[in-house]
Image (cartoon, rainbow, N blue to C red; front, top):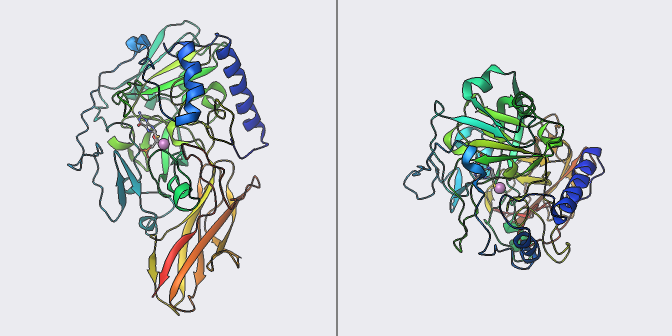
Length: 440
Ligand SMILES: Nc1nc2c(c(=O)[nH]1)N[C@H]1C(S)=C(S)[C@@H](COP(=O)(O)O)O[C@H]1N2
Ligand SMILES: [Mo]
């Protein structure tokens, strides 16, 4: 992480990853059928181009114990996105297989993002799964018996249910600002700030499921995997199904197997019937359409924590940073880019700020390009893994072009900086955004 944090949990995460990397370099860790030599080369190459070598082996045959009963039949809404729900222009900007929520469309919503307006990030296409056929297989040598255990949806629902509000935010949210605001080149989906949504999730604690499955003392990693189709890169490399290891410490802490979103069964695009929900962490950790979870006594790797979702670039080690975990801190105005406002009228401008480390306790705004600042009024109780709504009154003095800025501070003392250190894949943009508006 380029923003150091001093919290015990973060130190544990960082130490964990260093140990895992050492074990793996020493040949003691598995990487799902990908040879150590290939992985070493991957680590070295990823920094340079952010591309994936064509020799990367497909996911290992460990999948035999998984129930891949589903087929990726997501045909989309005729837009070719592979997304099932309607994507009205007033709410979304379509970016390939993804749909970004327009922040202006959140002005009319409450604390929680309605499912219909929640952003979608799909590596391939939404698979339409039948909850009645769905099973979750928990397997691996981190279980005391070393075998596999299956759970149906009714099995999960018989366990104690937990409800919590949490945002899901893509690690690349704000990526296009590296280019438009800092003049830098980055690769990946050109999100503005709308690759985030906050929902009330209901589900089963992953910890409860792991314990029931026979979690053993040797387990260190769990690897949830989606039932969507294999992800094939632009150059034709099949990386297998979306999967990303989670350290056991996080898996046992606050992770949910969510089956409800804002009081409804999970919609197809958001992981129906069950997704992993990893509060405060980057979106990729929250694997949708989860079909199996490997529990391993050895550290695990997948392309989603080796060549993706690390920070590469001049400011980072050659092999990249440690795999990204927590989200960074951001703010967004609930206004379109270049929104038009009337002069000499008092406007109530609104926005939201959030941080992966702690609740946002303060937001300062500027309506004159950053010369003068004043505190915004906060409208939510600050909570970690959640956003805080705010508002500020502004009476534009005269017609013209203005730049609005909002700068959040969280309870852990983190404040948005003036610029973000560049990384090639454009992750974790946290700088104060310069939002242009026109007064006319
Ligand atoms: N199975 C699966 N899970 C996935 C993904 C995916 O493509 N397939 N995308 C991930 C990424 S990169 C993000 S940011 C979040 C997005 O969640 P949402 O589409 O519900 O907003 O899901 C994550 N989980
Ligand atoms: Mo993401």
